[in-house]
Image 1 (spheres, rainbow, N blue to C red):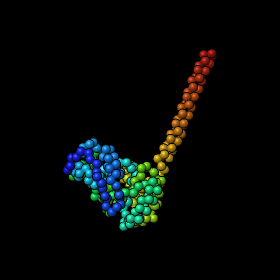
Image 2: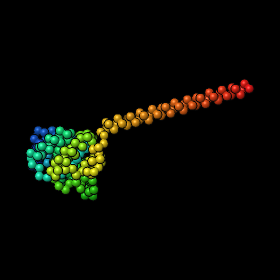
Image 3: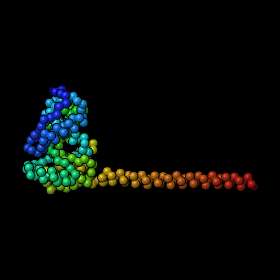
Image 4: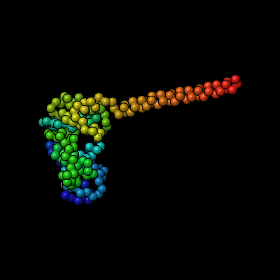
Length: 238
């Protein structure tokens, strides 16, 4: 365990060249991630500048800043294929990132804590996180900055052509965990702006109907009052 004052990482080199971060971008990204979540001093399992601590912070940021994440398994992706799919996914509104299963599962078991990189006792770990069963093979995440069923539908269609090279095993949508069947239903939904427009239209119709009912009731009450007054005058006259 380490208690360290804030220091910027000096560099990182992730395996297989799937995610390359140069020193300058690493320093900037690490500073943003660490400043976002923590004060100037942290208690961490691994040194603050280590790759493992950096990745735990990256996974926390990834899960909390992307409302929709598709989890996919990949098989025997060559470098050229990896770049090809990254480009296609990006052009359809997503971002592909390869994950380190052991570290990501460690993050999931501690995701409910303020700092997943901090020491945690076994009794406090979430061993039943619904995403844990998905990580039984090389896994990647496709992230979306917006909750867009249309973009998800495009990616699902794209990955159907990839077959066993890249295929979906589950997803996180907002705060829910979806299996493939639920995701296929989600992709058919209208977008949030469309849903909001439909809701506003419905409220407008309902509020209009309520106003008409109120006016009708008001006119009926006025009519009954006037009729009663008229009947009283006639009875008095007689």
